[in-house]
Length: 211
Image: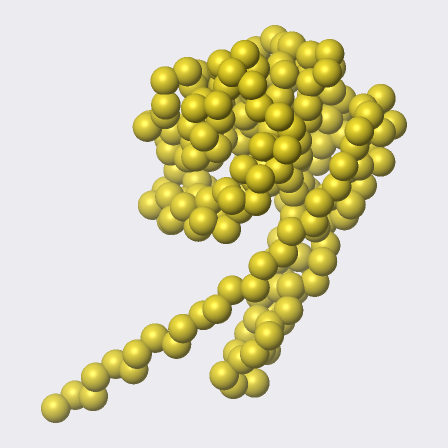
């Protein structure tokens, strides 16, 4: 099974950039709550374009950035080691790690439960596992210019959530199960934060009329 999104393309570049604009700030806020230290060894899984790996590199000792496609990891900070690897084949480096972070990764992988166990095993004593995934919270439009726009949105959401996602092994319920899975795996001080944000869309200017 291949990753459902091709991040190695030009569209993939835009995809990762937009995700960073949406999620880097809340991700950094969560990671700062862990209590980052300059002696920490970190594992960044599903590193994407390296924005969080680079951010961690300025606050910790070592960052290992892993992705199945590393073509977007060309501009990494000193202290960041890039490894191209499919996590379904196991971890590419041995622990222990003081911090393991994965954002929008396990939600895509049918082997997510086994991978969670491997991540827990790779934690150092007192280490932190930080996972960020999409939930099944319904995505709703706040306003639409025309009823046809709402119909298009509903069809797109149905195809994405109910047709394509299940066929590719993506789980929309995983995020709500993660805390229980972490506790069952022996982790303590398990905390949950749900983040949502509304976005505003401008209508494009009308094309000029032919003279």
